[in-house]
Length: 235
Image 1: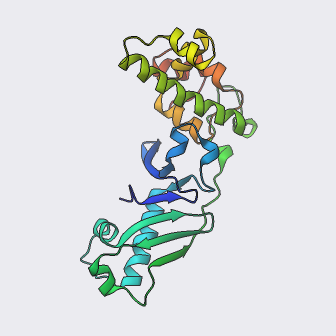
Image 2: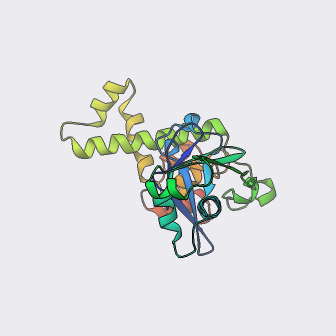
Image 3: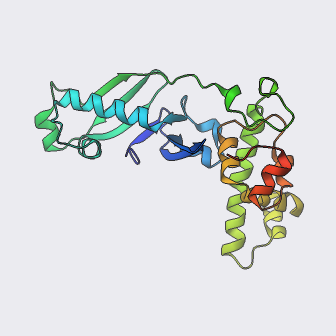
């Protein structure tokens, strides 16, 4: 519902995504730079629960503009909201400049500031715990290793797209251009075949300690076997 209008506090567009746990779908908005392997460029809050943010924004806009109930939530956003910025301690909503919005707007406010803080995540409980490891003993992947892994996944996807689109491209030509070995190119490309839930866990920092590029690059392409070889529960 907020797609195209929601950004983090570094100006990065936030994209809709979701995860499933115990058969339940959880929606959220994720800073798009994370998907491009640029975690260092993400804002102070790079992942937010979609339902919570949408309800809070719609409720605040309705009250501010004194909108009637017959207007559905999606129309409220599309008609009256131009931009939403997620900060660590508030949500900033820029109201649209439509004539209708201007006529109904209370006072002259064009921007709404909504007090909000993200609920601290219980990361220990969310870590994918390998077989034989007690949950209380599980440690998350180190932040620098996570950033390297996410960047490598994005790079592997780009190189795979290049090999698919350009008949003249080979691992050797890419290696020459990038100043690395063909073996490294092939290992990096193999990360493009990781199961989607493993990629999501990498982005969210939920992979366990020591599961970085080297470990994941040797996995088979079949998703179910990836979980088996890592000793991880499939999400």
